Image 1 (spheres, rainbow, N blue to C red):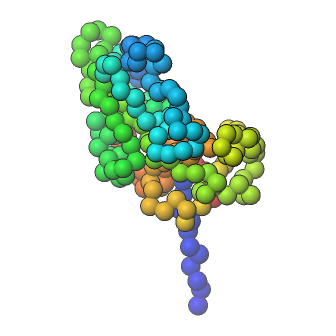
Image 2 (image 1 turned 90 degrees about the horizontal axis):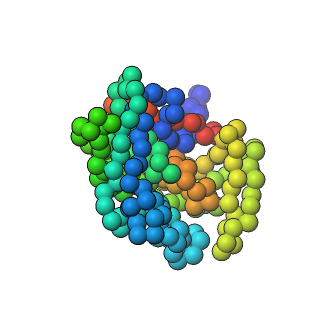
Image 3 (image 1 turned 45 degrees about the horizontal axis):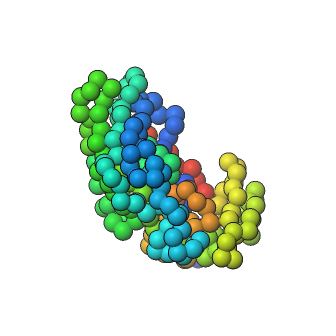
Amino acid sequence: MKHRTQLLPKYYDIDSDDAYGGYIFDLVNRENLQSDGNWLLAKPAWPDGYGNLPRHPWRFPNYLERPRVLLDGKPGRALADLRNQDGFWFVSRAMKALLEQIDPSACEFRECETVFASGDAGPEYWLCSATRFLFGKDVIDCGAIEELTLRPAPNGFVDYVVYPQTKIRFKPEAIGSAHLFRVVELGRSIFCDQSVKDACRAAGSKGVRFDKMGA
């Protein structure tokens, strides 16, 4: 009797697809969002020390006003459902609903004001941050990765320096039921499992890129 080989879960680096044309998303009030003019990110990045959760660099600070997004340029295509902004995302109403349905505790959202270059009000968009953090020392199989450099970091951590050809290999048993997550030692990258990719494909999401990680 032949035994079926168990298929390991697939993971992806998820981000906006720069090859997708359409409007340019320009955060026009970035310097007015915080009193220190620090744009979207809060300071200090790790208020309780590097790697100490739950506070971390990708939690939203208390903005003084709603992020205001100018949609400019030649459209050519429908508006993208996801655009990267300094490690955060602008997401459409449809993408927000999709992420909340797949993994309700993975992200935080802040409503944006959008306007076309013509001055007309734009569609509903949200600033989104994937706020779930996992520890690379727990979920990454460093011994099975090529093109990976380890660099000392505070609090006894090591940062993982990756390159375009690096294919990170995750440990599914350590990731568990998380569908969308960041890794402490990998900064702004956001990762997802196959269910997120399948849901985006089924919904016809536009402007989203998935780069497969190591098997």
